[in-house]
Image 1 (cartoon, rainbow, N blue to C red):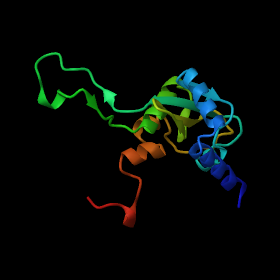
Image 2: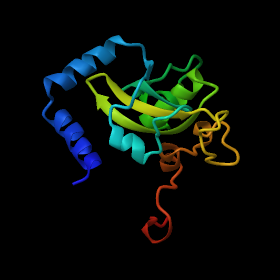
Image 3: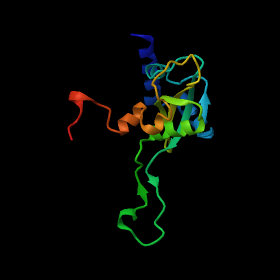
Image 4: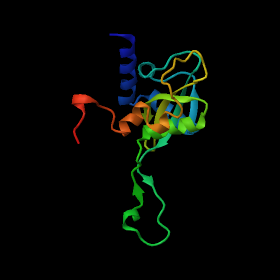
Length: 173
C-alpha cells in the first residue's frame, strides 16, 4: 500500500472511533474563529489529490459552517403561502458556502478546491485550498480564473450545477 493510502485510512479510523485526539481537535476548532488559516492540510492525501502543493502561492484555510436548515425571516406584509415557513434548506451545499466564505475573506486568492475535515453537533468543518494567481510558482489553471467559486467552477460548485457526471453515467432528465 502507498503512503497516501495509509494516511487516508488513519484519518478515517480516527474519526470513526472518535478518538480523544479527534474530540480535542473539534473542541479547539469550536473556540477558534470561523475562518482560520492553517499551516498545512490536516488530510494531506486528500489535499494532494485536489491539487495542493507545499510551495509558495498555496494556502489552506479551515472554515466552519453551521449545520442544519437555515432560518429565514418571516414576511412583513401579509401571509404569503409560499413564504409562510420558518426553516428552508439552503440552495447551495455547505461545502460551496465554505468555499465562498473563504474567498470573501481572502480576496486576492482564488479557490482551487476544498474537502471535509470534521463535524460536531452544530458545525461542519472544511479545509479550502487557495492559490495566489499573481505568483509564478502557481501553474495556470484556467485562462479566466477570476471568482471561480462564485461561478460554480470548483468541484463542489460543479456538483451543485449538475455537472458531476458526463456521457453514459449522466442521469437522463
